[in-house]
Image (cartoon, rainbow, N blue to C red; front, top):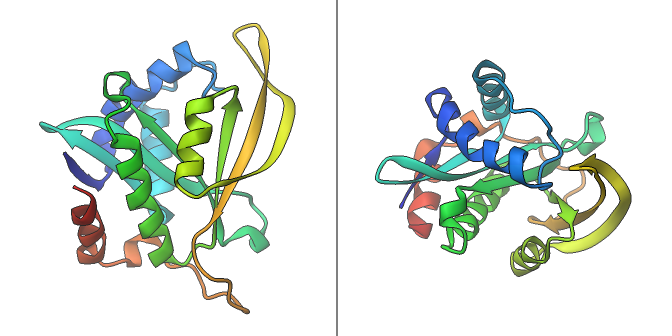
Length: 190
């Protein structure tokens, strides 16, 4: 398996993985498959500031994970929300754990403190996965989304990844992290 940061040329393959989740699950509350142009814009926007990682086997993307802004207000600048998706043929193959381990290490280098995961429930596998990675349940929103003619609850899980400083150090944008540091992280997990 190979790991690397995503680029715009990956958008089509990433979207093909995401498409499955839109059409077949309530893991995402998105109803319509975004256009390639819209999805490229998402990848570009997120990748400016946050890690967006792809996992490949034989040069084919089989999974991806990214961090994104948690909330707009400045006080939340040290928090991120994580998203992860794997090709359905590669579930239970340790792809998600590898991606999560890498992205958490990169986020530490950037200086983020809190990482959040929003999970549509019921989803026992995702809850166990996040607990295994040190996340704790912090809340439940009842009937938060409507998809497939059903109301769904969501839970929020969190993980603190570095010690809290006062005042906190400014966040390093992803492009300020040395490529060699990122590659060292990838090499630890493959």
